[in-house]
Image (cartoon, rainbow, N blue to C red):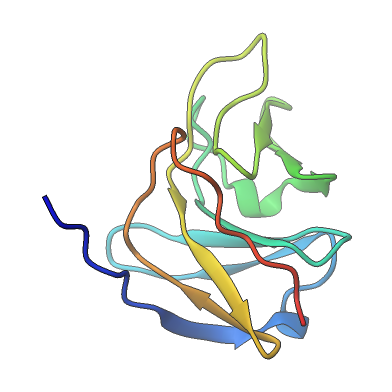
Length: 121
């Protein structure tokens, strides 16, 4: 079985996403939240908490986690997994940064795959 290379879509300049903040990419299959950490790593998750569907983009980014605004679940941005004792997973998408520009692949990844977040150049 051969895996094909992902198709990368240009989303925005990394500075369009505030540090410790988010931007939302509207998509027909559901909104995708782009999160930027204090260390300029960028992650992409479906903008839907695995608990009750709250908009993760409205949560608080801290370290490499986001806290859902509805019920304070913490979601790990690198895996999409809810932090214990909570259980669940938000869909995540590969992100790369090239020359300060953010690119997104719409291929969903699983938590077993490594996160592909690259610090801004």
